[in-house]
Length: 308
Image (cartoon, rainbow, N blue to C red; front, side, top):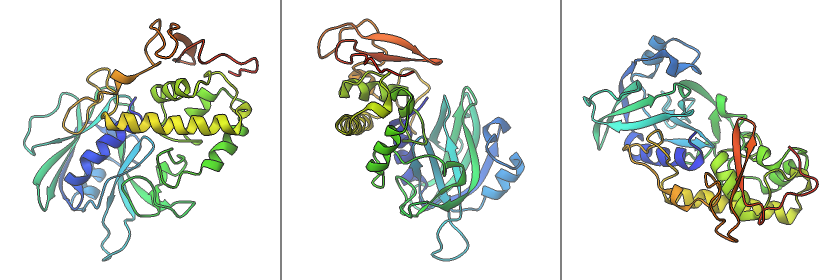
């Protein structure tokens, strides 16, 4: 599933192409792409056509395109919200380009500089979605996320915590939330109400960097360990961003269909049996729900108080 770096790469690619663009046409080819939209496909097409996009924003793994209102200089009141799910892609194409193999929705936008472009939502496994959603005020009055100055966020995203790279991320609140959780730290890192955008890959990588076993009880992490983990989370996410995200197959690509290269720098995730880059001990894999955790059994020793 695309995580914060992958979604941010997509957002950054969309931003210059859609900001200021007018939606001149919408075609929904598969209604399953609108599972989070309250209306019909026809209503989605009609409601979006003729609207102007004013930016591209992201919080965690969600991104949205705020739409201009009829009131001059008024803040956007609604947005197109996208969640990529397991295999969703947002691609920029020529307006008359042939349909993508798993194309679900195509928007044609007219940009004042770039002219007409096709914004294509493609999704092989159909777990992703698009929706028109009202914007609601942020609880802390800070901008909703990356790419927007407006203190608002889509209603569907309001319960999602800020991510570690967000300027408004509350470090004290993060440490407090950890201290109240009896669950394993790996499980807590994947809780999008604690910190967003962190998936399996980057949780494993940050825990390896911080030398913390994934089954360590979150509440028993010292302040120093929690701060170290947060610093490593940020470092891993920024490195992944610089490399365009992590691609293991053709499902994750940027808006131009290109893969990311962070997989070259992985220290633990997906490296079962390979030597740890620090100590040479073979990386171990353990079951974690319907997923896996990868760690070094020497560098990340399992504490006696481990929690699952």
